[in-house]
Amino acid sequence: MPTPLPPDWSDRLAIDRAHVWHPFTQMQIHEADPPVPVVGAEGCDLLLANGERVLDGISSWWTCLHGHGHPRLVSALERQAARLDHAMFAGFTHEPALELVARLRPKLPPNLTRAFFSDDGSTAVEVALKMAFQAQLQRGEQGRDRFGALRGGYHGDTLGAVGVGELENFLTGLFSPLLLACDRLEVPEDPRREIQADLTGWPARLELARRNMQGFFAEKGERLAAFIAEPLIQCAGGMRMWPPELLQELRVQCDQHGVYLILDEVATGFGRTGTFLACEQAGVAPDLLCLSKGLTGGTLPLSMTWATEAIYGHFWGTPASGRAFLHGHSYTANPTACAVAAASLALFDDEPVLANAQALAAAMREAFTSLASHPAVRQARSLGTLGACRLVDPATGKTHAPEARFGWRLHRLALDHGLLVRPIGDCLYLMPPLSTPPERIREAAEELVHLLNN
Ligand SMILES: Cc1ncc(COP(=O)(O)O)c(C=O)c1O
Image (cartoon, rainbow, N blue to C red; front, side, top):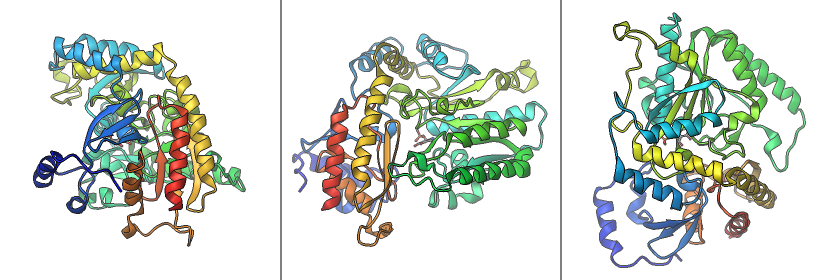
């Protein structure tokens, strides 16, 4: 049984029920099951209004890196907000943006030299799509009015981003009359990431996927402005881990067909996969890179789209040339968010953040190894600090029917046992802050086994 809420929360929840519309939610569920009030956060834990402490097993939607309320991020926020909270970025510049750029640039592939700021992952993707299309036009490629993307990808919820995403739900289907023209390519999951890997026939399947990719570009390449992909893990698509060899082939094909490669590291960036960027593991550098979520360590919204000098060059001209990139947001390069992001990057330099992530990755592998043989679990796998598996009904070995809302029930039950997980469909995963002590992951795995047993 959940611990009851203090009485003063009943009035506040009445306001929520009367006036608030929550994201990704069929609001009817909150009639019987109101949203969980959260009143604080410390390190890798969220503190709930009922006095419970829960491990933030999904880094508050994959944002939190160094733990909640890290003193260096909090003091950067306070200092900057008091000095210059916000100023417009068109025609102005400021120290926090420049410090952030100076700290981040050396951590990125060297070909990415130009940073454009926006507010969240979706807008970082919008910027990349618009930049790619306009750059193609301005370098004289008139017929490139389509995009390429991976099947089952997710790049955000604005219409441009939805147009290049593809999840088997309304996100793509319902809005299809409004979306960009997009050609989709399927890549296989990489069985080498699985704990109980069956590699029978894998080299042949990998080769087939490579030839399929070559065929896709031979047929569609000349119409594509850019191809967008989440490197190595399609996160919202159900933590689909795909082979680095195919990311390398994607780079080759984009080069051969004059297509810009956009890598969306909104979820995979900042150490989640064990390296600073996931694309490093394939030795691939994109033409456009989207970053957000962990950019500020999970404290404030901010995003960046990094471009090559060649792309930047296609926008260069006199004011009358009409070549400028006419895009921006009220809060572009918000100084407070930039200062926090710079402080988060300083932590990567001053503390063993990536070494801690490696230790966390080892604990994650162990945790999913202990889950792998559970009868309710299939396809347990991990990559870096991210572990995932498929949940099935142990009686039938099949996925639970959607109407059973098994994932949601597990989410609510786990909260009563000190753990925040939020399965995506049948995919149960952990993606905790990089600073999470490895023993907390062992405990989380034990708790999950216990919950799945009951
Ligand atoms: C890979 C990827 N791109 C883009 C986005 C959109 O980011 P935001 O929710 O900040 O708009 C997400 C969000 O989960 C994501 O996982």
